[in-house]
Length: 266
Image (cartoon, rainbow, N blue to C red; front, side, top):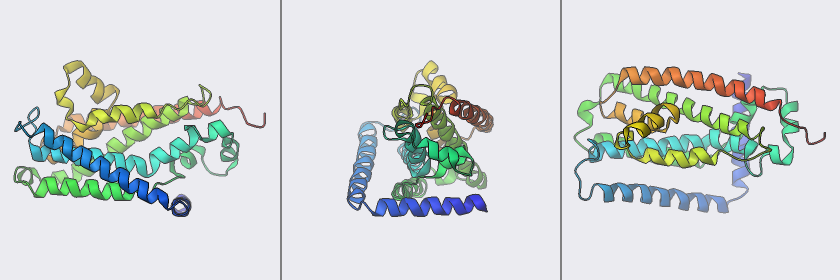
């Protein structure tokens, strides 16, 4: 209950901070519109002269786009902003404010992971959910593939993907302790762009790389496969195991990295 209460405090403080800069709402709205138009427009261009993309029909590709936008929205809700406030260009490792974080009577990893929320991302998540629902129920090819198992496996695949995202970003944020605050989280932001398309369109080596080593393909494609009735339970189980291992490794690396921190007062 203590940690839930802290989450409420973090969310309230984030809302008050965002409300103080009302112009940001206009910027965020414009960014959301441009991202949505660009994504749907790109999909329309791809399917203008083609009926399928590596075996993916238009409705399935639309579901994939919805999952892609959903994962971006979930990342932007709390994981991205919180960890960026640690290792970003104006983060605590640059300013020395990490001293105060270390003094707080709560676990450091919990604090740096959930303290900052970008509430506009709720709008992005809502739009992404609407695209997924439209892809599933507006077109005739997907609803027949939806089973009761889908309603269980799809949220599970999203949770596994979120664990992947968190673990990778925590590793990249922790690396800043070793390189004097050098921000590296942009690496993941660049790589996740490859998730706009099914991982199957990439050559064999890159397909394996993007699924198991840089799990962008798993993060986006696998949840979309669940929606389209292409669920591979072995792949899902492997992803769950790998995400758990990666989370453990990321946590250990973060704790080890903290020891490299030199206090701003030292």
